[in-house]
Image (cartoon, rainbow, N blue to C red; front, side, top):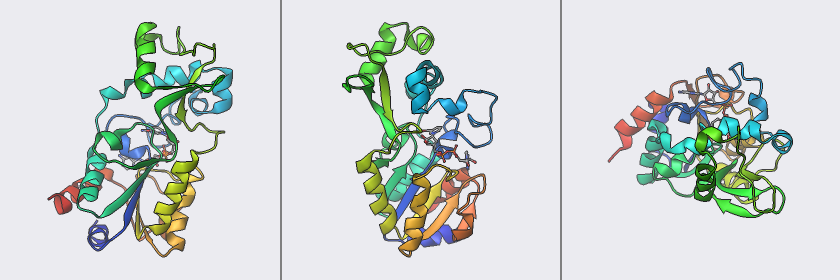
Length: 253
Ligand code: CNA
């Protein structure tokens, strides 16, 4: 980890690209890691965040999401969220691009987080496009049998009869334009891109490291499984807990 720490200490414009792996340390399963949703025997796993399946049967999403998205208060920011906040506070980290939809960077105190796969903070009706905020969705769930009924007996509906969908980017949907444009700028200007807890299998997010490399920046990857970008990385590491404790030890004021 020494070369990563030294590189960060000399960096003037580091950026982090984070994925579901950083939140496994908080108890939220990822997709493709060991123990992730895709490795379980759950046949619906690849349908959970798929727009065609949502429109066909929204209960698949709502059933799976009740223990994650609608139960987020049960989880707290983990060591990597906190370590990145430390790097922001000392002025080394200039941006966080996340594929995560759990809002834990914000709860760790980071602001201006670039959520390239959207966020459940807003839900929109599939029929009339009316938007409501997360707290209102939680109120609707509470008034209709609570979390246990979600996806089983209850699906959040709009007054027009349409179904509410979180503004998370599902497979089959375009990324939020503004967030993706900001991510492109951040990745292109980064002198270091910290790639943390992502399999780099989901495009166009997985194209961001290429932008950093093409602009002369360096990659450092911390991920338990190998990625296609490991050969372009200055160094690769597999343990996010070690990464977080090294950052805390070297950079916390
Ligand atoms: P992914 O494809 O599931 O990859 C996660 C990677 O993290 C895997 O390669 C794991 O090996 C690695 N990993 C897991 N735990 C650790 C650990 N403790 N130390 C080191 N490495 C670890 O997830 P991506 O983020 O690459 O895929 C993008 C998808 C996942 C996005 O659309 C997300 O919205 C979606 N997702 C998000 C969450 C969340 O917000 N917490 C949870 C599950 C899925």
